[in-house]
Image (tube, rainbow, N blue to C red; front, top):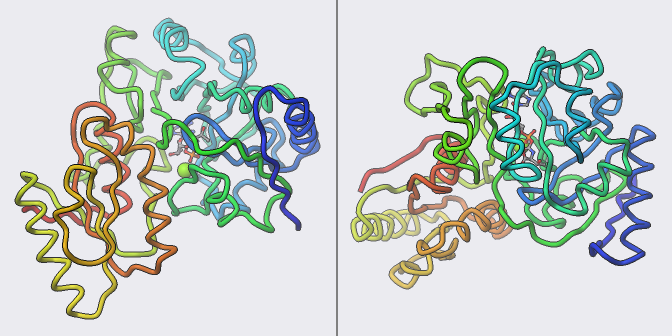
Length: 350
Ligand code: TXA
Ligand code: MG
């Protein structure tokens, strides 16, 4: 299959045309990759079981890992969610369109192929104008996981999508680099206290402030293997580069010293080394290929560059990557959640 990549800008006539064409592909049961404000998505008609099935095939995704249904207006939620609690209304009012996904009890309209066999459905209204336009053109309900091969870092640029999906899907809409760079926050509102199943740009405090109460899914904490995570996708190795990724944690001077000594040893042993530092620390590293992921003064920059940097290191054929850690209460929590998974929980304390 030939994959067509079409550049889009929000206002131009040509872009409108491209989005209409993409909408037709979706309505006829095909796949289209498209930009959202978080990461690129791989879209299909969420209400068409065969179309949803194609997503699993293209990604090589386990069929018990449910998809997020993307909508473009509030009225459509009632068609796929059987029950919308008051707290969910408040959250939608505050954060939609935007990087928030909520889990509801599903209606019959949503096939089990889309929900990985679950009786609940994940729903998000993205804020990216091209995504909203495509959802409208595609019939209103687009199932879209991140547009990467299952297990790989999520795509934050169209060329990342092409790396993984070239030849497997008919169309990629190229809207340039995304704004946030990390997938949406997932909040389960289907029973009791709103529960964060996947941290993201919208933090626990933000959810709490709006919904009155909220908690983290106990299955999210890395140490406890006895409680399975409630979002099925969170149990798989994920976001991972081909290289071995190792996180180093501690006071910044100690971290830099530790990474230097680890990098020196690995280089001596003949391994090709990558180092993830920040604008503040990069000049202190002496071995291997050193990249800055962003500045600690603005952790949004770190979220935005995380997946791209992992893919760059893979492109350079690095064997092992040593990275600094990030664990502040804001977006740092989501960054660390993704990094720990990408590293398979390999953490060295400095
Ligand atoms: O930002 C995002 O959410 C991106 C963009 C494209 O919108 N999409 C995305 O989808 O990250 P995906 O498939 O890569 O991640 C969806 C996550 C998985 O961990 C899945 O297990 C969880 O959502 N999920 C979906 N439906 C669920 C449900 N009914 N109950 C619990 N978890 C669910
Ligand atoms: Mg994903």
